[in-house]
Image 1 (tube, rainbow, N blue to C red):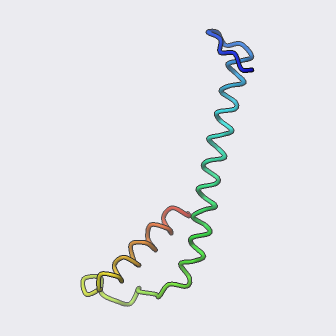
Image 2 (image 1 turned 60 degrees about the vertical axis):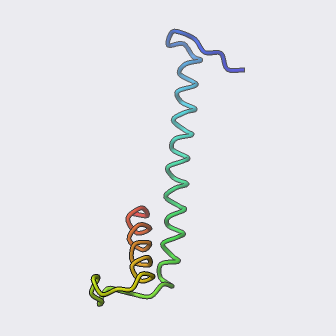
Length: 74
């Protein structure tokens, strides 16, 4: 059982340490999720030679998705 204390006793340090570990785990899981999605980007068509203003709606959606995944995976 975890008891919250008002001072900086062992209980408070333990709680802060556990919260820090949980935060780090969430960050790494997000990174691995986007790394996995980035591998799916290789299957999508390449649009780098096309003019952005002349793209169709679904091509703009693909371009935005690729940008979002690439940005979050780095």
